Image 1 (spheres, rainbow, N blue to C red):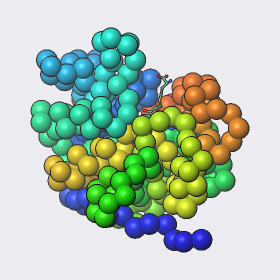
Image 2 (tube, rainbow, N blue to C red):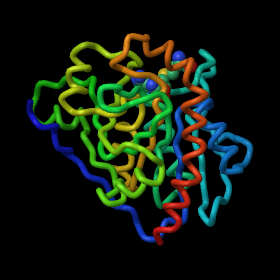
Image 3 (cartoon, rainbow, N blue to C red):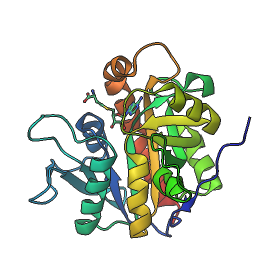
Length: 257
Ligand code: SAH
């Protein structure tokens, strides 16, 4: 079997010290527990022309700005997925500059690689898995394989603290997975499959802002239960795990300098 691919792009490492954090969370159901755990303000509009919502506050000496992409006015559902993820983070950085972006959210996991419902994954790298551009360099551009900002030592320290696994995250526009995508996840030893992180990584690269990501598993891609059923069943549990981990992650960030 061939080795997993190497990231094409890298991001700015974490600055010393971190004082302000932009926390981007796709879904309201994922965000509300985190907001409570960090005692943030009530949500308000990020800016007039956007559905994105902002909650903010001070936590353990850090300025925290929690942004969600908001709800679609026509369809009444959260603005999930890569397009809204990138838009929300880019707009948030315009009004809320920060020393680091953290993307926290839920994801599909892989039982064959140690995944379990509610288990945490701290992302080493991320790429898009559902793009096919059979042209040199355009392919790498579309895949946007990016090493996130944490060093191996930092990843290991956080993994120990949070009892999380360290590994590759994969982003696409679908909740389910095709057989080709499943073969791709096996080749790449993917630990978490979700719908926003690779897009957020493109924004972080363009803006030169460090990025790290923590994902909590709602469903197991390599099990029989359909992803949408497992997702709905486990969303509250997996989001609660994320909310419990967030103060610990922020404390680690604060303590490093
Ligand atoms: N029907 C759901 C839609 C959620 S889509 C609803 O209640 O509105 C899934 C969201 O959770 C995305 O933001 C994505 O990042 C994450 N996610 C969790 N499990 C996933 C999986 N197996 N594949 C892709 N995204 C997943």
